[in-house]
Length: 88
Image (cartoon, rainbow, N blue to C red; front, side):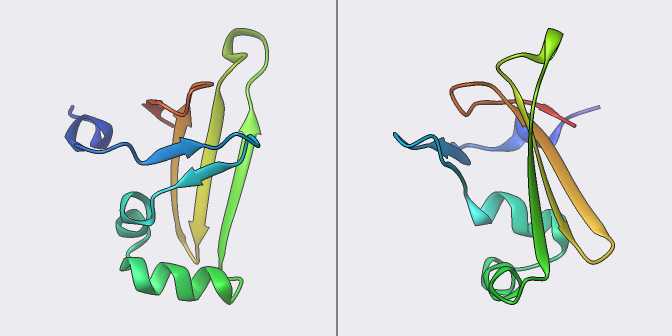
């Protein structure tokens, strides 16, 4: 099975100097059935939720990022550099 992360040709996640995780809307929006513009509108209206969970034990240094909109959800795991290492 081919993962969706195998088909991207850009870096969708960036961690800035303050440690904030910035995710490219073009990567997340389609998985939620939204255009990037709709995603931003729904996020501003509080209808897109995001959760970042820090890994422990064997997953130390990783984070699972989850985005939800209505009944749809997308998840992926990043390492400490912001590289996507797995679909979750």
